[in-house]
Amino acid sequence: MPAPPASRDELVRRALGSRSDLRVLQAAEEAARSGVVLAQSDSSPNVSASARYSYRSATFDQFGFDNGGALTPIRDRESILSFGVSVPLFSARRNQANVAASVAREHEARLRREYLAGAIPSEVAVAFEKWDASYKALDVFDRKILPNSEQNLNVIRQAWQLGQLRFLDVLNEQRRLVDLRLARADAETDIVTAWAELEHAVGGDTR
Image 1 (cartoon, rainbow, N blue to C red):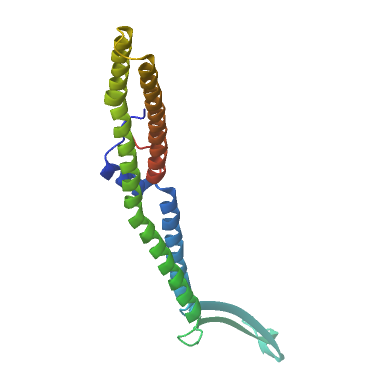
Image 2: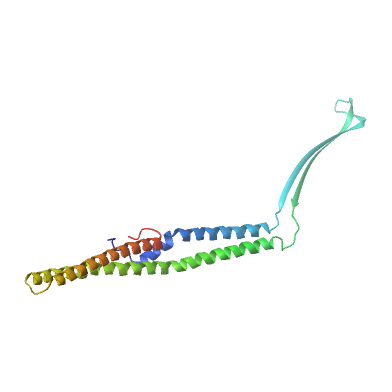
């Protein structure tokens, strides 16, 4: 028979920290929240800065004198450095539909996560109570019902051997003992099933 699990409050705490379906919804909520931030950022103007450098050289038909006094073609050289800032102009309603859809998805994901987080304690409590009832029932079979039935059978056998009861009485008591042992086997199956349901509700080990 499985050993008694941790307390119900401890099992609820474990379930809220280890249930894989809850972690999936938490991840979905985080992804939806990131989608809202991305949609909102796409609605803001993207300001961009630029810089440009150019060099220009031109030669004229006229001649002039260089530093040595010789004739040389007149040249014009220019180095140009320019800066610019680009600010797109658009309406404040740009991408509003995408923002609204992202907010709705985030709201839906949060509601689903909150619903499951609220339902988990109840699921654990129901599974725990079922296991506890099965455990107590099996304990009653082992400590009281079966020992008493076995004792009754021994007494009836002794009474039959003394000629005080019929053999049919012995057979009836044997049949009752067999039925009780079958019921005990069903109770053992119930407690194993309840244990499995409790582990499923917790999402991990219950000990």
